[in-house]
Length: 298
Ligand code: ADP
Ligand code: MG
Image (tube, rainbow, N blue to C red; front, side, top):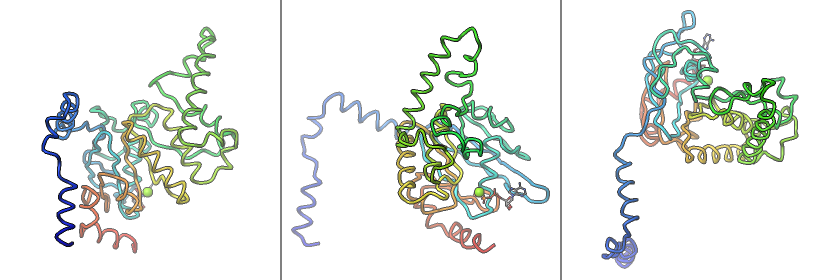
């Protein structure tokens, strides 16, 4: 860089001396709030403590502890067999851990049934089941599981509340269309779910999960079998939802994808948390590189 270029750059980045004077009161308050937010710890919706899961003689999860901060996109990565899916299943109630504890929103949820966990607002995506493949996308949305959170569809099925059934059906339908529109799959509403591509299915799975009014979403390998353009769209939607305040824990084998999209990364290896940190911290860690190289050739 020549001297004159340096001077020019300095001039461009210089803040005018009277900038402070020109700041309105509202602006000053905004920046004070921003400053305060930097120092206020965010909530910790999910906390996993010393989790262990054994299958016969195999220890799939061997004392894993970590937490997920509110409003983040957190990635859980690790080589094949690291224990990611087992951890995921223990958190969501699909498997009962051998020992250890899982807390959601400050309450222990260890060993609760999957639907109870989902009702608390901790929701995982589910693959579209075979019988749902023979229904349309819209019907899949209408049948999305709803718990006690928000409006209970099932309570309103009682005969003495017929009017509210009609009202509620209208509301549910409206919400389904809105969600399909958000994910840009409203044009597929009347297609059979079984005819969707891998990526479109993933969008539908996420759309169905959102209808349950979650606080936090857990995704296990959400990009598996998804073509690059739909992967980009799925990621865009995940980022948008994060900005709306949802928290995400994404379990993924593809390290690069997580590195590029998550602000916090937890690395599992042989059932334990090997390390965690910001992507740039994790990427250059010798232990992580070694675990990935070693894990691939097991
Ligand atoms: P990841 O998702 O990181 O690839 P998993 O959690 O699927 O890893 O698996 C961790 C370990 O536990 C592996 O050695 C796997 O073979 C074993 N495992 C997972 N599920 C079972 C099961 N149902 N029965 C026996 N062993 C299992
Ligand atoms: Mg897995």
